Structure formats: C-alpha cells, structure tokens
Image (cartoon, rainbow, N blue to C red; front, side, top):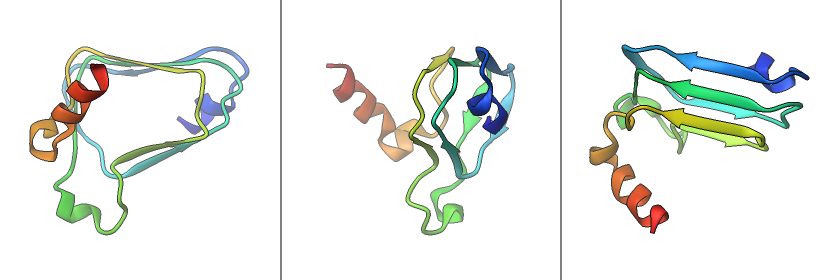
Length: 91
C-alpha cells in the first residue's frame, strides 16, 4: 500500500475472494490522493501469541482519504472482542 499512499491519482487496492493470513502491518501516511480498499475475501488475523509485543494487528498512522469496503467481517473478530467493539462504535 506504500505506493498507493504516495500516488497523486486515486488508487484502489483489491483483496479478492479467498483467505489471506495477514501478520502485523503498519500503513503510514499522509496520503496524496484518495484510496479505496475493497475486500471481497477474508482477512485472517494470526494467533495473538505470534504477534509478540506489537500491540496491534493492522495499524494506520496519519492515513486519511481512505475508504475501506468489506464484504464480510475479518475472521477471529469474535475471539478478540472486535465484534463487540464494532457494535458499540456503531451505536
């Protein structure tokens, strides 16, 4: 996504159908143009024990102009409490 953050034209990042294991990731801005992240597949979090002391799974820093469109929630959200946090945020 680093190239997308620096692009001066609108970008789309597409995650196709399928399952994709994503380890800890950091996306740093600022963005020079809009970015759309379309997720049709399933992003799978690693077991929290394998993430060490990172304190995050996917982290966005100083990233703006980004729209994330998901077809389904990320796996393991029920085990990590993310589903409850999302419900609270939506209220």
